[in-house]
Length: 219
Image (cartoon, rainbow, N blue to C red):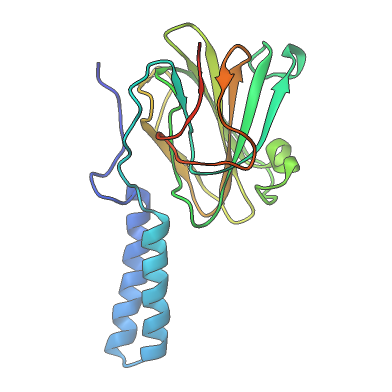
C-alpha cells in the first residue's frame, strides 16, 4: 500500500528551506560588506530557523493497536466529552498538546486509516496554551477513519506567533501511523479526539514526541 509523504529526504521540513536560504543570504551579505555584528545576528537567526524546521526520523512502534502522539510538546489537558459536545458525534477523549518554539513542529498521523475530510477555518491567534485558542484560533481539522471503522479527529491550531498551518494531506488519502501530515510554523497547538473506548496511557503535563510516544491503545 502506498502512502503519500511530503518528507524532503533531508533532516529539515521542505517549507523551511526558503526561510533558511533568506537568512543565509543576509548573513553572507553582511559578511561581504564587513558588518560583523549584523553577520553574527543573521547567522544566529539562520541556525535557529534551521533548528525550528528540523525533521528527524522517528522509530515508530509496531503495535497496530497503538495510538501515537501527533505532535511534539507537552500535554496540556485530557478531557472526556459526551456525545452531544463531541465533534465525532460520539463520546470521545480529547488530548491537547502544546508545541513551543523549541519543539519539532512536523505533525504526524496518530493511526493508520483514510482521510475522510479536511476543513480549514480562519480565526484568531491567541496564545496556544490558552483554552480559548481551542475555540477561536485558526485551525485545520483532519478526520480519519481507521481500519476498525473508528473516527479520529486531529486539529492543527495556530498560536500567537504561528501564522501558517501546512497540511500535506487531502481527502481520500490512505495514511500510515506515524506518517508526516504537515506542520505549523512558530509555536502552536494540536488536539486529537479519540473514541471513548480507547485506553489512554499518558497524563497531563507529560512530554511527548510525534510518531514515537504511545498516547493510548484502540483496544
